[in-house]
Image 1 (tube, rainbow, N blue to C red):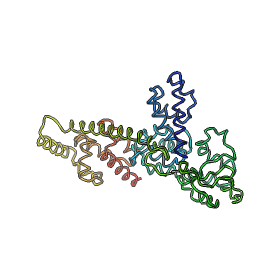
Image 2 (cartoon, rainbow, N blue to C red):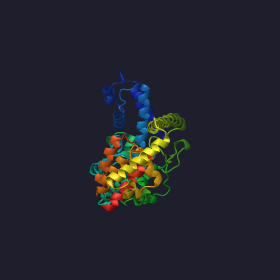
Image 3 (cartoon, one colour):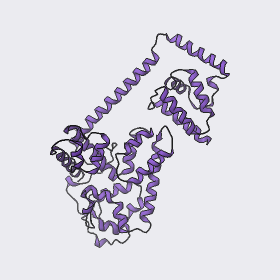
Image 4 (cartoon, rainbow, N blue to C red):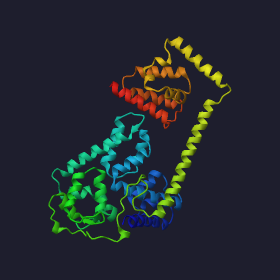
Length: 395
């Protein structure tokens, strides 16, 4: 069921693109591909690419759409953060543009980002925002529950199958597995338990909107069920397995997944290797000079000594140093301050004068920009997290 649905949708939209007179932005936006796909192509800035590139992005768009519609919390966290625990707010803001519906999540996250001038936003912070939004949604849904509320709540689930909202009516059906994934993603266990009243209900069973409304409104009588609860053929069985990539969708045939994943993984690994190589080159440039290691070490010691005499304090006098391990401190000196102990001392002095994380993060942004610091470096991320925790405790 999933396989056929996703494949047909991808093939249908690729076929539409192939039939266009020209691959212009205007023609693509006027075409019959879904609004989600159009939005994806605009954000990716790929509307003017060749047919092959467009086809790949159409496939990615549909996989992302399918995941987001069914399990928005999981997809947002996976897509916004990938394998990281925190990301710069500008990265998150850009990625939010890919998601044109479930606006209560997007608006809540954007509002949080505007109110917090943080260098990094953590995955747990965004998770909390989404979960709070889900609590509000549940309260509104279950407080004086109505047919319209239930229909609107499951709107995107039915659009996965029917595409046009006007085509959705009380007899419209979706697989129970769709509902199960959707409710589980929101942790609406009480609503999910209501479906246990339907005897013989399976993941591959179909339920129509009329019966869904009765079940959630506690008006369901088992004899009235109109759903087909009989087993379907093995080729049509729902295969709702959790994926680790929001761009890879449950149920797409393996041959296509392998083709897409292999190339995307290869590109990801090449990009990672390129970044690491470039980072290593930058680091090597900093380390390599006309002086020997002994002279550099001696120079650092001399600078530290002079600075201590002139300012009447040493680097180790700062409370911030107690937050950092010796190894991390050395890394921060090298990466953030380019091994300039005077610059580091001045910076630490300013940081210690601040009372809030807002002030401290503003100073760090200036340092990062001036010294062209790689903010994705794991040592830099650890440094920022430790400082943020320190200032939050002070406030």
